[in-house]
Image (spheres, protein in one colour):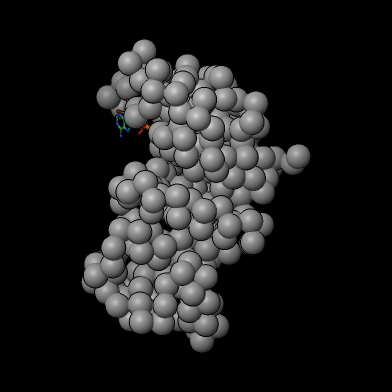
Length: 257
Ligand code: ADP
């Protein structure tokens, strides 16, 4: 399988001295749904932010489709990457349509977003995506803040795909949703990505969801890579990611699957 992203001995130390990543080397397979699993503080968000340039490695290097991220390549790489957030991060006062369209604006200033500078083709594609993520015509002009959490995350998925990314990063995308909605959203994200041939790197802290959705699992603990591999081979290793108190619960979940 060819690789989409490669991390080469990456470390991240924040200015206050916090070590978020310690010598992480790993590869993200192209076209797969890869889950980054680990407890809070394990370094998952930091790893995701390295891929879209929101943070820079203190040591080591990151390649996206063979292009090393650096000052001269960052914008090129950013054009191929979209992100989905835990708190959706829609613009509350804008409509569903305008939020989705804003995903097409990565190269244009937000000033243009405000004067609604979009082509007919962009609008058509936005409407198609809104339908694809399961929202009806009645939602198109509704304000984002009037939607439920699950609906807002659907809008965020449409926004992520409108720019035709090669890779979508999802940072704990279901942490603020109830279990039923979480399953729906992860199913939607996985199906949409598969349909467009897009690679997904999704952080989660829930073992059961990782087992259900991951093609490939990366386990992290305290800034280190704990294990990596196809999801079906990694079940026993999952319990190691968590503290003693959580391990028993984790093992029960693994047996149920
Ligand atoms: P996760 O996503 O697995 O919860 P993070 O990548 O957010 O983990 O964080 C890893 C570690 O880095 C944690 O100890 C966190 O407190 C720390 N951290 C994250 N961002 C910063 C920052 N801007 N400054 C200092 N420490 C940070």
